[in-house]
Image 1 (cartoon, protein in one colour):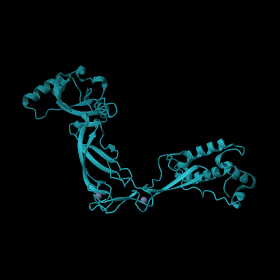
Image 2 (cartoon, rainbow, N blue to C red):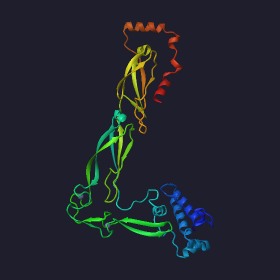
Image 3 (tube, helix red, strand yellow):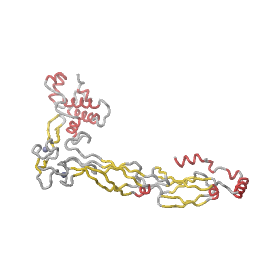
Length: 370
Ligand SMILES: [Zn+2]
Ligand SMILES: [Zn+2]
């Protein structure tokens, strides 16, 4: 025995037409299987639709109020018979295409295509134009997509009158329900070539190679995909083409590690220069830049070159380049160098050996790569 219709819609037995409509509208939005992933959503949607079908009709509602479910059925009512899928109900009730999902009928749209392009890190900084070549099902060049051998007549399909689809209109409590299906005679094209094109056999489409220029925006991340609407395979006659998806791979650059919009690079100096201070050249995306290394610089000290990183995809504002200073210890000392180092070592006092900021190598490294 089905549940009580008032209970299903969550309205009182005295609810008026507007309240019933409102209750169904709310439930329909909540239970549409495209948004509601619960396994019983579809069942509950159908239950709500049936309740609405009865309670929105004054005569049926009276019958139901007096005799219940049994009364309706013995009166010849067959719930749900007048309408088809959930999408049909949605379309009739809300107008348009419901939530924009759902069954496309008629000629099939073209499929999507995926291609990949590789760009250099320096190109990520500026953005770049790349040509990609890919195989695509496109409009036949011989017949320009109409499927007829050039110069031969094309007649309008008699079955569908050239519309390409057959429509059936029914009145339901949810509104006018229009169901349409692709015409089987012309395959949805609405037209029938008298002599099919010799190149494409009448389909109007051929497989071909296409080259497109792709604008890769500055700041793109490795692995990001761009969608170029309509650049995919051609659809069947009267249907839209698919999309082209371009996956962008950013080539490794051994000089830099990328951290979002920031770049990290390393520069090595001998321990003596770290003690004395020096100037070093570091590579940036725009060439070399000099940075000052103060006397007493510790290993893994970080220098920040503001604005030398990559632009952010949305704002275009550039990140920084963070330069990590690596300090290495000179080896293979000559006798004289060894003596100098010994003298230096003997002369070092507490004031020379105090750690700067009290911070050790490990925490500096962790900060640098954090
Ligand atoms: Zn052709
Ligand atoms: Zn037709």
